[in-house]
Image (cartoon, rainbow, N blue to C red):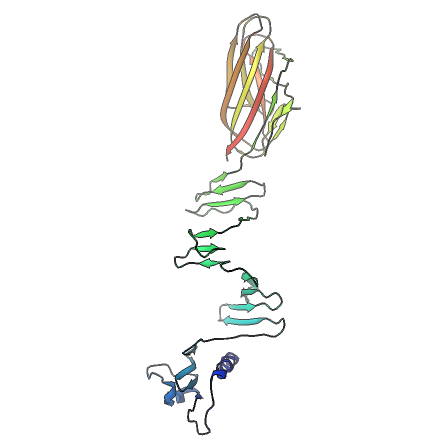
Length: 345
């Protein structure tokens, strides 16, 4: 503490003159303790705390340490300069029994920093030549990044927000959060911890002008459609026409759409049902099915459309199946598309 007093005194003295041999104030005088009250030039209020150290000139108090409070007074500009030489740091340290903070001009980099010296952290840094209004807080508490006119609690001018990918954060009641996760998707989380995905996944398989019959061996038994020959465009899921399915990679709600042009084969009339199943036909998917009654004789074409919403789990495979509910007449699924779109998690 004594070194700090001395430093500030040295900084103040260039603006001061000299003291006579008999202690008469000609331009400046210093004092310690109770004796300061008897120097008229200092103009102390009797109600003030007795100063521990003071420097006065003919206009009054210039420098004062009283009860732990350091005061610099001047009719003009008051400056406190902390200067280091070379690449040394210039520090102002703030200490108490709880923690030690340092305001630092970092000599090696020229950065201005606020450091939690006790914990070894540097929570705030500004590099030399940072532009004006790099960080600005207006009188209402709005923060501007690159602007002195923020219009919301946080306004970022002329730049892109870069966010590091994270895992799902802990929910904070009444606060929403947005973030990228390590699966390369953009998410939002409401105050109750419910997570929503903003990135759309999609994919599908299809076939055009197929002439191969889908054979029906037994009436009333599901048969997988295996005539797909094309993977549709996809993102975040894996369509594979060679295995006639689409693999899901995120547990979420999906919209499934099937369009099919189906031809009957000669023979007796029959009732056809098309269904969306998952995991090699282990179970149905939502209400994704449609029926059509074919007349006998063959040559009839039916256009069927199926659309449904379903909850699918990561690694589920989605397939298209058919069933002849009446007999063993075959069908030709000439043109088919099965498309899947993620809606929300």
